Image: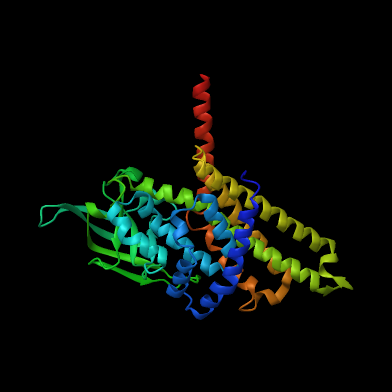
Length: 385
């Protein structure tokens, strides 16, 4: 198999996921409360065996899951993805005890995970985070830290059961002085506040008032937490692109149906050349984004050295493409697409955020340029010129 041609079994699985999303997940979402964690939805994702696959799948399979779910039920896609984002550091960098306590509960949907990186003054510039981890010796003689500061724009906060938290253990050391901690939500001194956001899932801020953590809570190694964050983001950035591709495909499919049925100017809307050309452009960009997402995911699975560049390219192209396709779909549908409850009204709200989270589009362009110049410098040095 190549990154550009899925096997029949993979195509069949994607079709099955789209059907499950429409028939079993969408009805649960419609019963849920927007802006709150949907625990019934998470439980069903666990029952269907999708949450456990977060820890057994490669990047390409993760992309196929997210794209397929997004096509029929963006809320189910997001619920699945946030479980993976919050728990992947535990799976990849946690201790046996940490994994044993949390991963089975994440897999069955009974524990809600969250990834707590962003701060009010450290969003795109994640290396500038200021949540402080002050060293402390406990009464039992063990060393530990007290976390003091705040996090902001955290998905699933304040309703998560545990947080992967990134804090500064070495002041002034930039990315090298950050440690990742697994912090249960019931730790003393940890409180949260929901934010009123344009989002179907909770997003909130977290306040840390001398929250105690020990070496048992560290994910990976002290002062190496930025590596934990980047490892997680390199895996999930292509799949954010897959989420975007799923939304773009849903908008394109709706547009094909509408322009085929809609009477206009003595014929069907699709008979107008200007409409047909716009639909062709939507399809072209969606397929190009899909191929780049699959290529980036395959590079990750194969351990290629250029994963950061490919992941950034995939997220950038796919999220910008989805914004374009959904906007064109709204335009071709006219006012009906803006009525509350219409698929495109929903997608129009949903499609904006992926261009910001897990690294804004501008950040992705910076990563791409940095990787290009780094590769060029290495090649020039190796050539001795």
